[in-house]
Image (cartoon, rainbow, N blue to C red):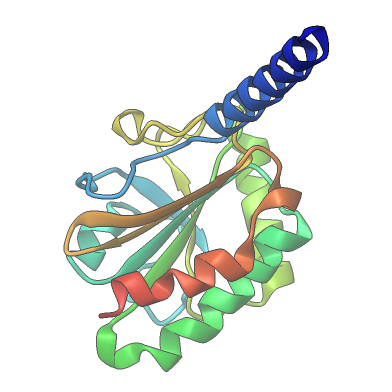
Amino acid sequence: MKRFTIVATAFALLASASFASAEETKSGLQAGELVGPFYVTKLAGAEDDGVSVGKNLCYRCKNGGRPQVMVFTRSSNENVLKLVKELDKAIPKNSRKQLRAFVNYLGDDKGSAKADAEKLAKSSKAKNVPFVLPNEFENGPDDYGINPKAEVTVILAEGGKVQANHAAASAKDLSVEAVIADLAKILQ
């Protein structure tokens, strides 16, 4: 009986640790929630989207109800780079569905976040994805609930509603494949 109690206690501790870990990486709007407007400054990328570098605008509004992927990142990790490259390829492949994406770089310091976003844009060589700095650059728009402990939050929306959300406390743990697989949810 003692052994059963020890095993049960150990299992309960493990389960609660996993739950706490999952809680830490919950970030951003969740499926079914509405995506509201927020303003950003375009820093680089998507030269043909009609928005000049330095312009302050609401990309989410510009994209309207079209299928869109909003990436909020504090990292230029290889997984983030891979995600940007995959999205850059997906946009022209899904031009009939009018797929859009944009990368919001976050950080404690506005100058550093801007510089890091520009480096990510350059290293990704993305032609179809704009890189932006949100006006609320520390943690993104207040009403989006971006977790300050999440290095990456990806929100996939269509028709003004979130269809899928992926968040990772560490960019190395982001499943790029899962994000790309979820494009099907917004390209119906």
